[in-house]
Image 1 (tube, one colour):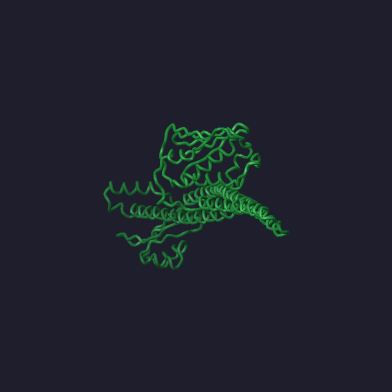
Image 2: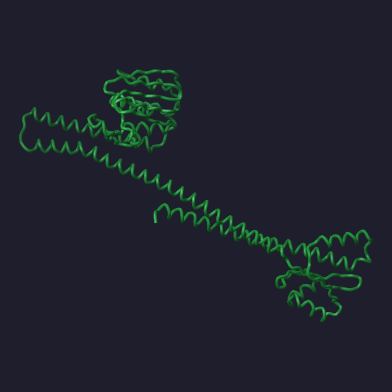
Length: 391
């Protein structure tokens, strides 16, 4: 099973398990609550029955009529008993059909007893009347609790099933996105390490070769000078690569130094970089909150990159709020490689003859994104390239 599927199953399984537990707890509490409500109304019905039976001669007609109406509008019952407690043995015998010994003792202590009798429920209490003391027992077949519980059960079951489907889909999407991002970062880091190793290995190999040539035999001073110059050139190449690596690492992973952030006009950064062969057009200048030195490094990399691959044609830099557009009319970039040019050490397939390390664009993009800017590129072979930075 794929890792994404495992993660989604574990996540959704845990979450659905919690939903099921919550649903069962809710069903238990709701069922218990409906039972309590039903017993409450059953007790009211029992008291209304007792008043109707024993209080007709004590109440005026209006009050008695209200008692009758209250009894008629209450829940239906299947059995109603009024047991005279004067004959205690006979009364206990009749009560034992519904109550156990402990419940009978509690009833005789004037407690109201709620009980279950098969598929029926009932309530019992002692009623005192001027004609005697009676145990009132009312039994009712309760269809409402079963109906309510069935509705709750099916509703909760449907909720659990829907939740399970939604949670599984969400977890799959989240897991896939997370794994895609991890895989993308892993592939980027892998390519970064491979390319960095390759770029550093080339000059080191050249230096080692020059040293071996120098040690093989004696040379003239001029020959030693040539060898040292080539070693110096390759050493400088390593220094440049390491410096660019450090700059990229700081820009990509470092935290912004808030003390260096300031409002800076874009033209004050761009215009000093527009030297020979670069035409600057300021249509609408604007200010941004950024580290001026880092921003200058990013824009320098973009402009110098355009000049390098322009084949000697002029480069145009245009400022129009909120964009900076850098356009050259050079060799262009293959369309299939446009998405890769911002990866560290990546160089397009048509620029092998031009020196470079492939770090400048990656560094520029990392810096610009730290300041909330986005960069896009469009290009056509032998027609030129346009970099568009939107702040």
